[in-house]
Length: 87
Image (cartoon, rainbow, N blue to C red):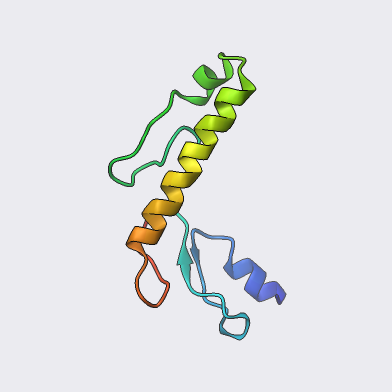
């Protein structure tokens, strides 16, 4: 990537880079304790509450659920050309 192309990827609305076959992308979301602002999803306690469990295996299970839900929501919302809307 050129410097300009790298810079174009820093905002939540990332420009397409056609020569590298990278589509335009909006990655505005976060998953610290669940899939935020994307309809129905599992929500886990805030980070301080998760940390207070002192249970790394539980945190890994939470992260697995969050990542699975993110992928499912992305795949359901993806257009035929591979683009997607917010969240």
